[in-house]
Length: 308
Image (tube, rainbow, N blue to C red; front, side, top):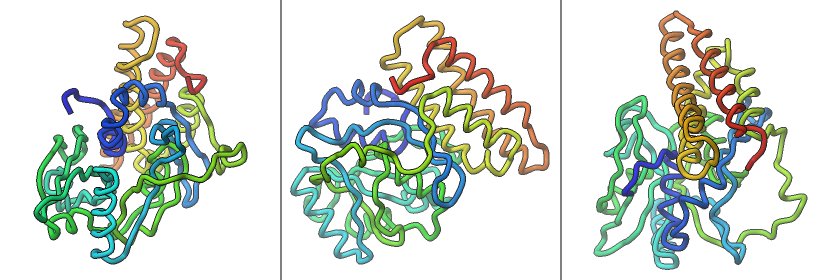
């Protein structure tokens, strides 16, 4: 990618996947970004939706997860999807991704884009760029053989309910997941017709930037375990909101810049507080202040009470 888009590993590579058929994906994605929070997901905690779906085309085709326990079956399905569409999103494991700063350290789901297969070599691309708690993750493009790709897509040994929810809502709304014990990828396929009933989200949701932020603050402020559980979700929300502010939000430029700075500060404060609490020194006031500043800037910008 030519510009440093502030997105997650999901949306950075989703945008790369969609770009050949949707050259204006930056504008489309910015228009789709929101903040919605489910307060009662399975497994407890919170679940976050950062945007509405941008992958569904005019014919009702979009992405759906697929999976297989057997590598040969997974490999054949990935190759078939490449033949059909020329590209396929696959679910990698950061512990086994050589260019990930979490390589051999920590595992979490990480989307990568497969964009070719020739002479036994898979063309693999990763547009995600960010400074993570493990270090700098730079965009990557390269070739892998079957053995290397299999390693990169190694199923996670263990996955938390919070991480499952990130996968489940990665496309913007609840999506059925195959077992996380197998190899996983996404297939472009005909989706069930949408109905008013189907459009109703499952569970209890709070929509809109300011209302959702207040709900999150109520859960994590003063609760070190909850803050640790959702610090990455706050970071992801901040990146998407900063991307939206940079791409399309109307209004005063200075107010937009102030909001972007406040969004940047919230996850920084959260991560610092999590690390400090782990050393026995809670920093609740720091997180309270970051939430208060962000809510103030969002509300003054007139940017927080609907899905735009």
